[in-house]
Image 1 (cartoon, rainbow, N blue to C red):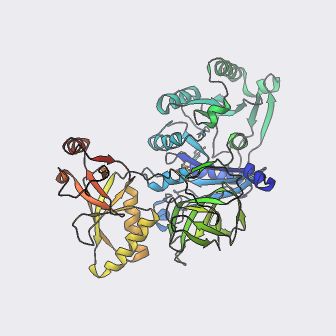
Image 2: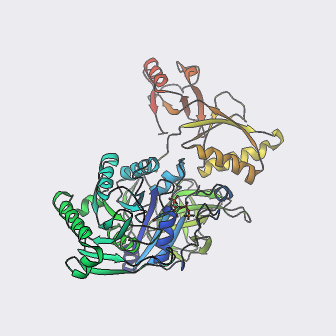
Image 3: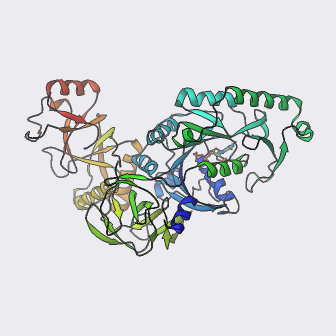
Length: 534
Ligand code: G4P
């Protein structure tokens, strides 16, 4: 066993923050950086209203719209931990980028707005995390103003998301005017000093034993009695603390706080770091790869071109799964079988990039991509040979036909569409029998189309014409072994949808409803329909 490697792995916490827009993800991220000492005064990550943008907003489109379109990574230290936060786009609209980022995390922090509870986007992101079986921690935010009652929020988690919660702390006081929290693990009260800095600096708390008469005097008899009642209720009727259930994502540790005023933020951070798992093992074609395996391995979960308009670079983000990464090391790129030297690896804090000398499992590193990396690719030590399993392809739900507005720009158009498809920004199909500029693009969320249009214009100098198609579902078409390939002519009912080929020339049918799918199934009994390519 390599002690250094083991020690570094135990220090790492790699997680994503998931939430509905406006629940407070940017604010909480900033406060975690503040408590970690990575920034000294909160407010350096600016809000959208003031038209300044978050540190993780790289692309021009993000600045313009004030949203985070692409996922990014922030790294900092707190106590003995090395923290990697993967940012997930918080826009209403979904993109595949979000899904993929969640494949690279070991746990998730779900933020809810205390007044709004569980919202649409939270639900979607929660379910992806649940499917992966990773631990999910809940932070109920905006406790500095009126919101739903804590017990009602717990019920909502159970009824809407189907997960039971174990409150790690509990607000003391009345709605809109909470004075502090009951720290359940230490069974003590923490009352917060008034926030005189508007949340710019860390916030002190005073600690009391629950039966301390100074505490009772500070909160008043009514609030004290209410707290006692809540504690009894939670102890008698609540779910018991169960580490195994938390690790399996079946019980969510629940925290109350206010990211804006720093109420409960430190308590959350410390307890989260204590309970969140260090880097997990990953399934591969040669079995489980434990993080403390000597040999290096990683997978690409995101590719981003043109992050810096001054250098037309392309970065592949890898999640390290095992072994130690060192700058300049040579690794095997499994899909091409080539050896690649990792010369200028980058890590990110805010908008500053740093060259990484070494990194460990759980860390995210940006690699300059010479054009060979694809989403889901595995990198291993030169003497190894395996691929990581289960990197999912997401079924597209929205489709459009695109072509270059100016036919003179056809070459740039093809280059742009090809590169952005490789990057995973969009899925590309061609209509069987259509011309070369007859491209159909598929996406999970609407925003992916806007990003495509914007990037083709700004990075490849090509404006496009886009016609939305009425289809909502794609099915990859397969026949049992030994059959002739499926073509529009051999598929009965091909005209009930659109017959296209994906970028590996596999046949796919786009349809607009379940009814059409039913008809196709019935009339082509041999046909095997798959939501994603096999
Ligand atoms: P997001 O990244 O999840 O979309 O949310 P973000 O942190 O940008 O927060 C959305 C809004 O909610 C911001 O207000 C932010 O200040 C506010 N907010 C975040 N945490 C808290 C909290 O604990 N309490 C209260 N009361 N508000 C909070 P904004 O009006 O959009 O911007 P700003 O001008 O106030 O910064």
